[in-house]
Length: 73
Image (cartoon, rainbow, N blue to C red; front, side):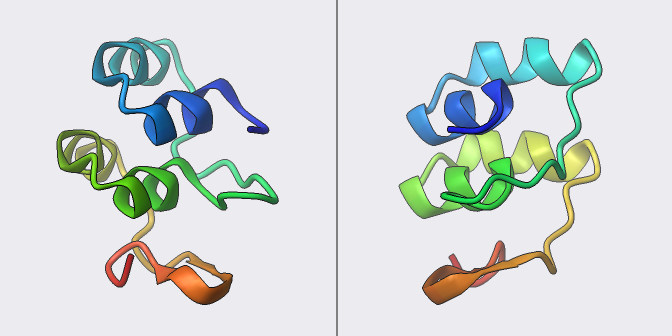
């Protein structure tokens, strides 16, 4: 993982994601392996985190390799 938000999103830690976002984490920060936190969470099926990230302004049009956009993942 390249950001704490990306790691927490991928692993499904909603409470950590919420804390990081409240403390100013960039919901659209890019990491080379999983793209954004939104892509990581949607790829793993963590829909509660996806919802939170979208409410906080995550960009659904960001694309990452074979997984496509946040909407496609």
